[in-house]
Length: 296
Image (cartoon, rainbow, N blue to C red):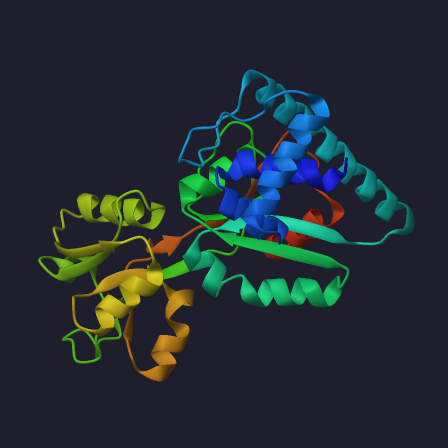
């Protein structure tokens, strides 16, 4: 039995998907199924419940025990590799990172390139997801690091702050606000707005600011993806408030007017999270250090 087979099994349970487990391990779905059958034959125990016509991932009691013990084996194997790299002072291995789209697409590429240049033997495995999924994946050990906007303190998680990001107003180039250098929050009263969905942290921060200032805007649409929000503003749905880093190229291209908000509190905090009870790999420590511009 190979260590990779245990990893495929654990990935299948964590991701709750044969297709995603196959994609993560660069194999086919049929290969995933075959490896699960091999494990069951090897240990003479059924590990997953089978439901005719469906590919649900539901552990049997034996499968639950096998999953927990397999995670320990994989963690020990990772630590073995890490300790051996430490003997020769080599920074290598793969750092699994989950992040939200707005951070991953616009704030991480330069950092990842810088990291890969400094440590060519290491690799950043970057996944995009919603905030709740990022937190869940960090807590259950599917990924080593999570990078979020407005990270909330939580038991069992350590947060390393990154540089804050300014929130700005975006509008179609022909909008009344387009020629303004700054807009006050009171000027947003009654405006048509394209918003993040309600469970997105940036939306929660905006709603809090609007409520404090007794501002009501007209919700035209809600999206969870910042690229969709930008496109909706470009075609004239309304205006929006987004991280400034996400609209640098749009401003240069002239497809969006980017206007500063007058108040100083329009700031989006960003941070890296990881499990407090687990030691980070050398590569992960160096990546966190790079992201936070601080010694770890």
